[in-house]
Length: 514
Image 1 (cartoon, helix red, strand yellow):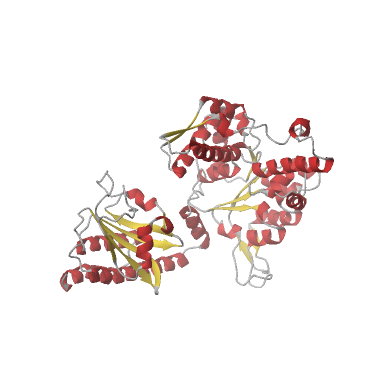
Image 2 (cartoon, rainbow, N blue to C red):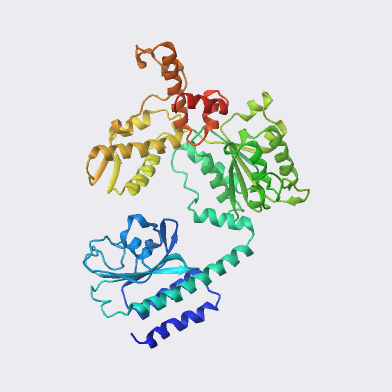
């Protein structure tokens, strides 16, 4: 290849470096120039993020390629390209699987024989990502000068460097709470649909739309696992603040010493480890919505400080006397009876009334009838996709078992049950069938733990050879294990269910070997 075609391809990219272009447009022009320089059927630009390659732009590949994340260890071609300093061309008859099999536009059969090459990109002498080229003609790159691709890769590295620096400057120009919302969206934490058609759920939807249009503080109550965070997301999306951030904090996940810092922020030197100023959740949510989950876990002292912010909109970061004004809509959630907590002196009455301006009760799953099967369908499809199955469905006896079960763990319990049963059924199948059907045996729905201890630890459930201490430990182990399974990642909720202090639950679980 002569220098003239290479120069013709690179000059527009050099010109683009000094122009303010959207990132996607910059990358689109980059791949367009690459296909002009090295004619092929498909190209892609992928960025290395840890152990994953993330497509930033594609040309000639299906659009859904941009939504995929390629784990390098699962794709040997990508691993070889990243491990090689310069361009690499693969033999047309190589046995290595192609990551783009089935993704080339206009090609519906497998990529059995074709021409494929790629080149790593380096930014600041560190691997940044890959450029890949694929041609359906197995001899397309026979006369290719790989030096031309390497020169183009240098310009591509300059392009991505400029794009990233511009993006970084734009990021710094934005307010931090807007960035937080962009990060939340980029991580895929988009509000999920409330699935179901029952009257109870329809009433909840109506209430959600009604209160969403206002700016009232909402207290969402309901049992563990009913989907209180999902309701909070729906309220935010129905509100005039929907384009502003929804910031969440699980109050049970942090000790009291950190809750204040998370809520109000801190200044440098406020406590050991505070090496820089940091905004709290209230400031990040300014203009939008703050969702406080497990709000029943807040200490009385934190309740008092929160009350002041709710009344005046003024807050102070830890270690600072400076006042910050925030405009935040508050949504809180709890599975506790806060009115009872107030009567028992464990919760401030004034704070409770500030929270419960508009109370919303999320119905338990056992009161939603056939919604059970709709939700099961949602989780079945998730697991079908995750496991690479053609079809995943429920047998009639499995449906009957689901409808008959009381669901103490609600929707979260159903989600985990479907995941477990799918994996169990796949393991027992021994081979990948076109259709995998879950039976009642796969679901293994037993009477839930909790409620009447006599029903849980019926004498026939325990081996006769156990002494009193062993039987007591076995009984406690079943109770604790069942509560922890119904309240995953939430020791505080499990402790409340068992009537224990959270620290005592942790000690008991360790003693029982859980």
